[in-house]
Image (tube, rainbow, N blue to C red; front, side, top):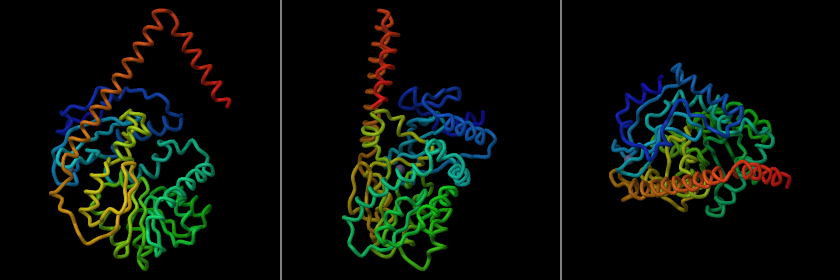
Length: 368
Ligand SMILES: [Zn+2]
């Protein structure tokens, strides 16, 4: 199989992953996926095997290649090698899909694979507008009142921008998903929604600098962090602001993934950040943190002070790897206890009765 060849080529694949369950297996059956998700997963894997989608090797942002492999599968069971850099603590996919492959993936499979194909567009729009309101409420009280021009990179349907537009901000956005951009234009009435990335926005909106750029769950999807941040600098006015939200490693594993590391592993994520590793990357591109938490939601101000790449956050690698090992041990313990209870119920011939009871309780719960 093609993926086996990629694995063999990569030297890092010899290094151990955290546990067996985080290893890629091409015969793995993942429970809980919808029909649309299964179909999309198959179409994605077919494109990898036919070399329509290709992988590339990449250095860490800090310039080193001193990595440990954490896992090589994702939540969907897709091949997804993810490494942590021992120098700076930044986690990245490596090898990863190249630019053209990701571009096609975002236009064809991404939204369907991640569950949006199962929700009607108008319902999704309402949900996204509510999330956009949350972003607006977080950002605006923290910024001065002279913010007028707002751009969003990876704006999906433009739902967050529609909240800003309602509040009389001047807005524009880009996304690689052409279908969602077209839908967003129609429903929001925002003309300045374009298919593409930052270059498209620079081309269309070169006459006006942004006071604020939004990257809402987008930064973890980018390929070249340095280049993207440089491009964002050219979009912003001097002293302009950048809002970034990403799934913060510590907070997401605990609160969203319910202590299951696997939930954090998604093939669309090229990077994974803690607040310290995110600040390090932003500081190196001349952005100073104004506000931020481990969730991660953070606001940065464009500055002229550039941190040296050779001064990464101290001990971040140790802090993260310790946390991952601890969470994986907790997961293994919980699983062992659960299996122990199941075996005991089987022994006393109560397993089927308890299983049926659990299903009945779930049905009852669904009624309310
Ligand atoms: Zn590094």
